[in-house]
Image (cartoon, rainbow, N blue to C red; front, side, top):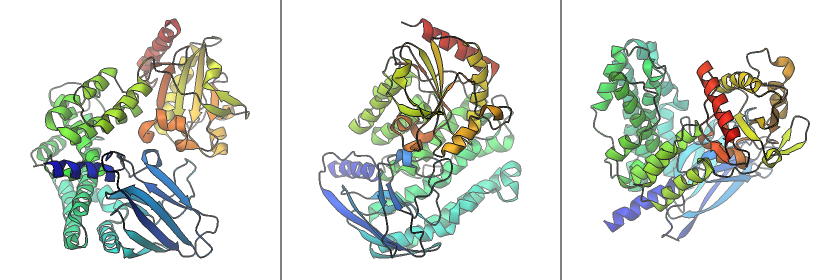
Length: 507
């Protein structure tokens, strides 16, 4: 039993969390390589993936560590990584070029690969082609073969013949076939990796495939718009999925991988909403999944699921303080307890808000402390975010209610890394366009000086990089509420106006 527990703890570590405190053994792994015909100005970025992942893959915001290396004149690079004695996931970007939104441009990179501790892998990039050598090469070749079953996830993301809308059974069969094909490739390579690596990669494959299925359901009918009718085909799909046995035993340590945890969370979330729908309850009445998680899972899997749930809903301004207390009442893992306590210390009412130091449109430095004695409404967003546009339009109406007030300040903080793009998005002359994020002339517009999603304030208050995000700060610089109403409807505008007035009256 003791060996089993230690193995589970080791797996958590491989998922990016610094959890194996009792195992102090450090192992050095090397990731080296060569990029043919590279751009001489580019650097290579290595990201050690964190304990959680998001739909679409690992992100910088969730990374446990990020390393940057400038290749030599021949395109050769080398990373020396010290980790605990456990496998870990990483992502390697050939270039440090970014999209206007600030995200790294991914092209022919090594995405979410598992490496065994102590391996010394060499990756050679020739255009879109990758070849591997060194200790651990067979493990990498196996992961490449699995990825080549569905390059860029095109089969997973597509709906051949629009089957999802006309024949969900055929649609599910397509996704099942793809899953089985990737698992067959993995099985053919089973002797090329350790049993632990095999279990982790298998869980990753299952998690990624099944996450997509539940995510697709989340955009269907009443799962997406309350009050929409539930089509029989979607209901049959939900029943079929519910009746299937679990892919992994609840005590299987592989269930702790980030991809599999993401799948379990989406499964739980969908099943809770489905029960509400068939019982004629608003599926969006709240984001409370505590009972569903706590009744179904125990131990580390439960703790990691609870932590992911709370982190996810915090990103969408849905974190209720009772959710935090409920989770903490049953959690036992010190690391996950600490993560939830960090959320509590960040988002609970009365907690002091970290000061920031940003630039406004005139290039002047602005700090949160500059607004001491005022209630501050903070709107966090980025250019290209559709829901952020809806919030900006609603804030125009809300801010009018506080025109000429000296005790309320609206602050717009953009994650954009491209300053010109940010300035264009808040240009008053463009406010009539549907792509304008301009609120009013009295709004304080702030820019993170190119730090974007990696800015410490952004990372702290926008977990999971989920936008839009609103914060309501009291006159003493403390959280009044981290779940203010989103002004995307008349009701939402009225509620937010009321909340701001309550913050003004708050002592």
